[in-house]
Amino acid sequence: MSVKIGVIGGSGFYQMEGLNDIKEINLDTPFGKPSDSLILGTIEGKQVVFLPRHGVGHRLLPSEINVRANIYALKSLGVEWVISVSAVGSLKAEIKPRHFVIPDQLFDYTKNRVSTFFGQGLAAHVSIAHPFCPMLSDIMYEAGTEVGVTTHKGGTYICMEGPAFSTQAESNVYRRLGFDVIGMTAATEAKLAREAELCYATLACSTDYDCWHPDHDNVTAEMILQHLIANVEIAKEAAKAVIRRIPEKREGCACPNALGKSIATNKTRIPKETRGKLDLLIGKYMQ
Image (cartoon, rainbow, N blue to C red; front, side, top):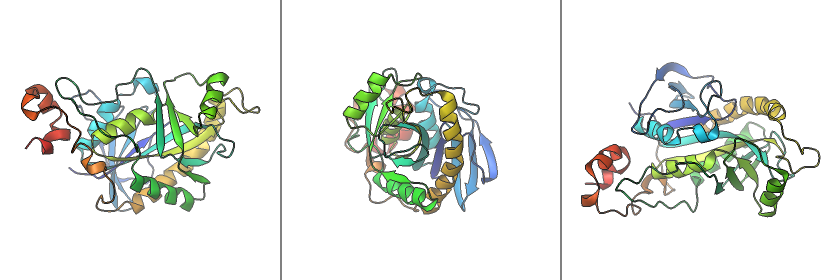
């Protein structure tokens, strides 16, 4: 089985309408089980696999998501492109609730996440200077514009630990540092996707002004959910527009060969168990 396009749905985005020839896949990985069953189907004439990041019904906190298992499972199905959809808070007045942002930079402020496949006798250091695939990001921007949503191209996504939202002091510091949106999931996914040599980009859907805005200084889940519900439906249409535009071949970005010069350990010194566990990622470099 080989399906090139994966969609990771964020808060409220638990299913992908319009999928035909649906097949539910339950996978186990060397890193445990993914967030939920993976749903394979066709949409816009292309095979797609969908995975709800928090599990159907939103059962998992951001720090509880087994991102390694999620990314590994997608890779094992042949996925090359990962469309991530996530809810974010806005740190800029011009990024209003229900706007979309296609960030091009990340600031990782998480504290308790596992964000690498490596270790246990195998050291690798991928470049994450440009954490989002530029090709896929461009496609996402075109798709957001097509579906009629105000879509901001570029910007920095700060990834916080959660699950609590920011204090007002924290929110103001993030603004002074020049960050654009804040969320709880993209950094770990982007790092692991790069290690897995996947093209990954995020469609960040603004739900609120965090708590810095004088008219929005007490962010509540209820407030966010109102905007979230509206965002999710249009995000699904945007995801379909992205899928339509994805080319057959990956050309013009460094993602497919991210590990090429990143493995530091001599291959003769890699423990057999570790090598077997990571063969899906490193096999082509072990010849």
